[in-house]
Image: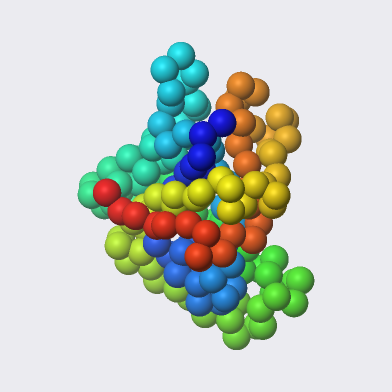
Amino acid sequence: MGPLLYSTNVKLKWWIQRTYRSGTHYVWCSEHFDSPPGVPLPPSANPGDIYRRLKDDITGKDGHSTKINEQRACLTGLALEWERKGEIGANDKEEILFKVTQASWDDWSPLIYIIPRALVESRMAAVPISQRAAPHAPEYIIADLREVEFDAIEL
């Protein structure tokens, strides 16, 4: 186990969580940015592969991008869930849904979150093996990552 965790997210998700969730972020993360030697990470669990795929789709303006469509569906679902739980109001939900449907290519650009493990270790939840991309590839969820606990970079 290294001292850092990595997650790749789109700018729009970062902005929504900063704006409507008071800078509290929900992330899936990995102990590796890219596959370490001898331990190949499946593309859907590899922050490096996710970053490159999103970057390629943005550069190529791929209107059928699977990753962008997944992100669109995820953000829509989160807005509906947050409203249902009373975490945001109806107006905020509508604003999020509007922003998701009207997002520019730049809004879908990937950001890499670099998370010092020591800051979040007590709040990391291991993804159950049945929900991982592969049994040998540990993944974690941090449901309440605060902005002071990570750096977001763009390559």
